[in-house]
Amino acid sequence: GVRDAVRGADAAARLLDDPDVTGEWRAALRRTADREDAHPLLLGDALRRLRDAGVLDAAQVEARLGLALSDPSPLAVTAWLDGFLGDTGALLVHDAGLLALVDGWLSALDAEVFQSVLPLLRRVFARFEAPERRAIGEAVRGGTPASRLAPVAVDDARAARVVPVVLGLLGVGHDG
Image (cartoon, rainbow, N blue to C red; front, side, top):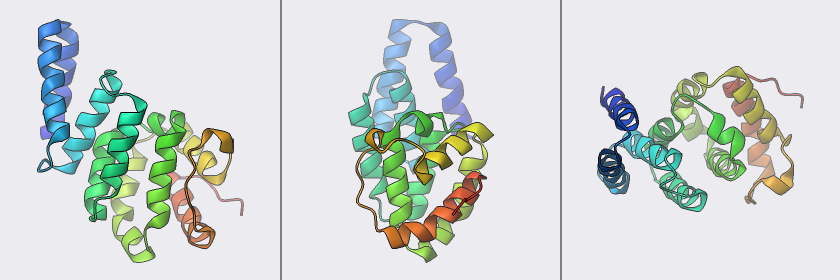
């Protein structure tokens, strides 16, 4: 599909290692990432590629993620996350600020909405390697030092209901 075409074009641009081609490709990615009418999966994918290429810094990525997470459609947000995270959870493992934003969004969903996006989230997280899922689960459980996580207002009662489901989604146990 379109995602495979984007992946192929990105690989070709990197392989050519031509500054003009690279510049044009990054400009096309930026135009895609800036469009409000593009499919959320492509928006997330374009932003991830710009981030990986060093075109956008962490603050810019977090601002865009925060904006994407504010979309009133949880299905659109899930598609955006699918595009942004791709086939690896390494970004969430190594960027506590992004993980805190995603965790905060998940924690804020009411139970019915969470259940509606759960199958899509499972598909996204199923592509992550087991050690990545485990590390994300440990961070969500509190295994990551709090000083490294961005502050997020959390409703403890709501979070307590969501944590077991998220840990199950990640394929890791819940010790209580």
